[in-house]
Image (tube, rainbow over all chains, first blue to last red; front, side):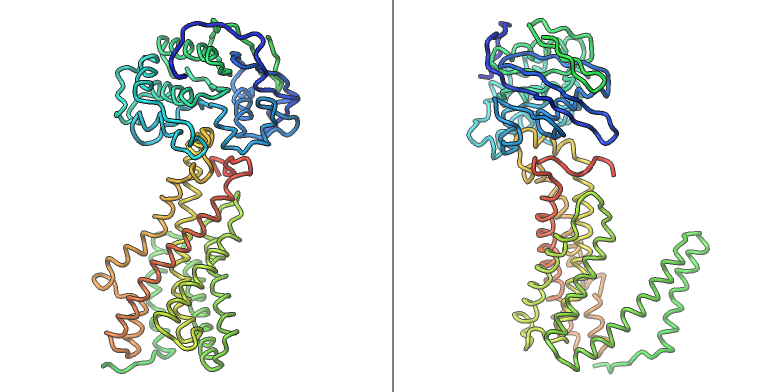
Length: 232
Length: 262
């Protein structure tokens, strides 16, 4: 399930995975999102764009229920998010924050700690072979699994966080500017890996405000003036 | 054995002169501590004299309800002081602190008076009030340290806690290391004081007993009990308060209530 694949194609008649149904949310300062509706299907790639502070990250935080909508509802596989036990919900969703968050410990510990959580007790931790394969794929082959993760550069940590989320094999993965601290080569490796996730049936929501154009078929959500415009 | 020399009012007034050193330092270095110093002196006189008269009264009446009532006032006052020191606005922690304080102080004080000292009755004011006061006073400092550290760590590590939550951690799993750090912060002073006692410091209770004419060997044994009970009560109060307060730092959706910056 973790092995990389290089074929890129989208499944056209796949079932809906994530639905925003007339969702509104506002921050205390007044900014937020208004009447947002869209549906994402299994294995669909979604690019989210918009200016800084427009609400792109808020959109992702709503998916993982770090924020709650004021109105409307969000459904995962047809079930409202607020009916899940939160830790169970979050085992279905991967979330890579904009700033890489690394725990003290080795690269291996950083990659496999989610599998020690109670909510994932039935999910076996990936073997070293799989970890090394992913490190190699994201231009981190020089990084040892025993190395202290806190000594890595920000760009390396960002890729580590991406791998960590992918390894948990979620239904949906939310990537908040996962390439913001990367050079061109590493950025392309992450973008390609993200696009290839759809082959495993993972739906990908990627916030990106660089001039990135996915090579796979994708949906485009543009966030501006508290609204989201959808380009299929 | 030395005889007990009582301190009279003129001697108290001479002792008051010692505070003038602090007052002079505050004035000379512009520390602006004069007001706090003045209020502190007044409160020291008023609170301790009131407690002296109250203890005299309690010893005379020997009434269980009165003893428990005084004890409750002391514990509630200690909760108020913790509340005043910690200054957290986003999480309501007064009720959990009260529960933690009531449970831990009462249990430890009763165990010490009834089981260890063997006072009869267990609420005997001569034992229950001073022992309860020492438990409350020391645990109060531990609770302040524990809560302050917990809130500040949770604020500073909010992103990391959110990251754990996003991977399916419960709020308990997400704050495991913060819980440990805060608990250690509360427990360490009492443990450290065991290292220096008798070498660097002679604790107040023991000194008080010796000054009052007690046999130093007896005073020392009491002091050992006091040191051990303080270590126990600070741990118990800190563990209880952390368990109760931690839950309140998260919403039902398991998101962090505290903002990153106050």
